[in-house]
Amino acid sequence: MESYIFKTVIFVSLIIYGLIRMPFMKKCKLKQNIKSENLSYEKFKVFIAWLGMVLVPMIFVFSNVFVKFDMNLPVYIRILGVMGLIADAIFFYYIHKELSDNWSPVLEIKAEQKLIKTGVYKYIRHPMYTQCWLWVFCTGIVASNWFVLVFGLVTWGFLYFTRVFNEEKMMLGEFGTEYSDYMKQTGRVFPKIF
Image (cartoon, rainbow, N blue to C red; front, side, top):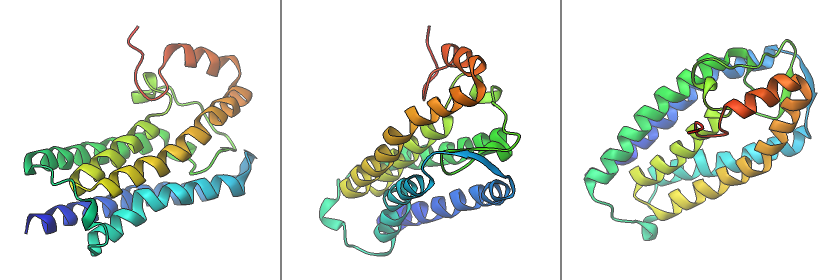
């Protein structure tokens, strides 16, 4: 019975993430792309991440294919994962709201793009990446499944590590010293302590 509850939580969380992102996808398509970085490879990387962050969790929800990878975590640990997913969804919405039409699913600069340095961006340059790490980790904990957790971390990690440095290079090219000063004041995915 409890496995159905946790599977339902994962399913609902994926729907919520989709509903949060949908209006921003529409806004993104309306703005003209003025600079992009190998768009077909970027789309491929997004697809790979989607496999681990969406498709595998959905397969987990609707089948028992990954049952041999169960972690058998205690219920209270899985509930902590649920709480993490709730906090993560709120964070996801807040980040998208802060970025507004400056967000893009791929590495590109849009017309009239601004460097956002308010809200959470005052402390972290890439809070969306922080949010994705948390999402993947919490989904794996709620699923209590090694395959869901590790595959999600690997596919998201592939996108993150092949993108973040190129993204910062692109932002430096677009915003110059404003971005380099911003880099000195902020952490990449966690706030700077000192």
